[in-house]
Image (cartoon, rainbow, N blue to C red; front, side, top):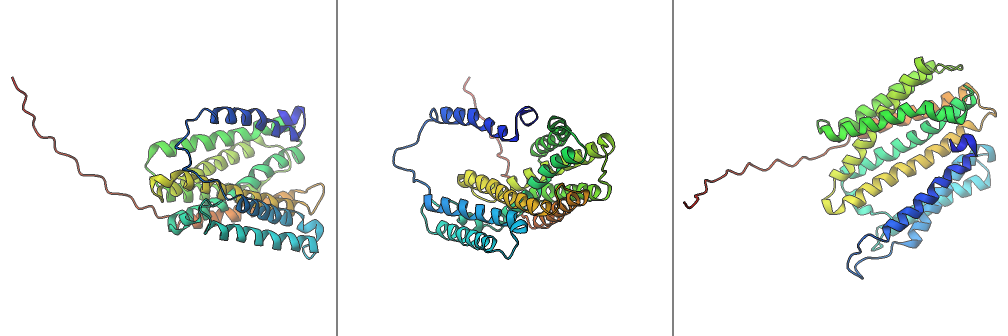
Length: 311
């Protein structure tokens, strides 16, 4: 609604009132004991943000600047160096920007790899759908938003059902969700129509896409949380989310590099992005196969002893 009535930049206005509310409520959260916490590694944070930003910008502009251009090479090399230095500092700083010690757990490391790959497919997949609806099918921004809503509802419903059922482990959720996502991508690649077919194409493809996303989201988050002790649950969940977002940033950068070949974009350009997302989803499924969650044996039932009651 904001994009349709105002401008795409107006989407960021949503952050303003929500940010104010978060700050207001945060000030009312009871604090812990004074002097027990540490400030996070500011330099490491700057290095990580700058490194990943440089990598994303280098990938985004690589095709228009030429991959051999000095600017592109400087961004890619500087971004890789900054990210590597941030990771190195995280192994030595008392309050690191990333708790790399959690990666000593094989399951946690695999969950983060799967989450990063999932993000690299998820974010461009969501963006390319809206671009296709508006640029090829001629939908307005509002109509495109309504068209992708069934997929979002399917993702939320799938996530809730999987979380409550407890019948499927993280590996099953990730692999099944990725297979469903990849199948939706193959279907889209083969049958992507240039004319609007919402009921016969977009609705079923979007619903399957959303269900797959819900499964992967729950599976990767559960695997990350279950692979660490309860005291480090928050750090594990936060790092897993960060991995997905970082993968998403690079995925969107790849989308920009793919789509910059033609202006306006052709049907083939959109298919190339869908192919990229599908291939990355297959890698997500392969990573999900490596998830191993050790379940703890249930405690033996306690036998109730008879209690004598005085008359």
